[in-house]
Length: 159
Image (cartoon, rainbow, N blue to C red; front, side):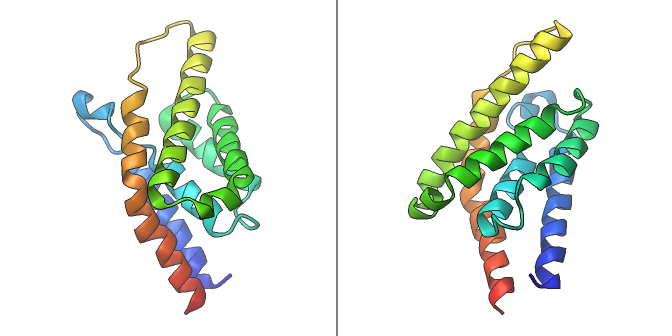
């Protein structure tokens, strides 16, 4: 893997973490997509042998610290996300971008439900959470991330 690709991946992750932590008004906070999961998806689909389950530990711990959640919760969620992506790796290439967005919608929705249940069980202060909209906006943004991130990674790898 070229140095340009590694630098580009780290820049993508940095921008995703900045966008994930971007302060938004309460009305727009519910519509914030899962930026880090979008970038992790592009990375795993680009090179599943390089960006595997080991990626779940640093990214998950950084998400835990950034969002102030229980330590290890996002590690499990990111590991689950990467595991499912690696199971569906061959099929994801057969899907067009809209079908990939649908798969990503279901995956993010499942992760949000697991996150909500874990927080509700452990903290016992379950707040009502809008689960559909962030997953929907993540799916809507996938074609853009696919074109900008994934295709740029392919061009950098070739040229």
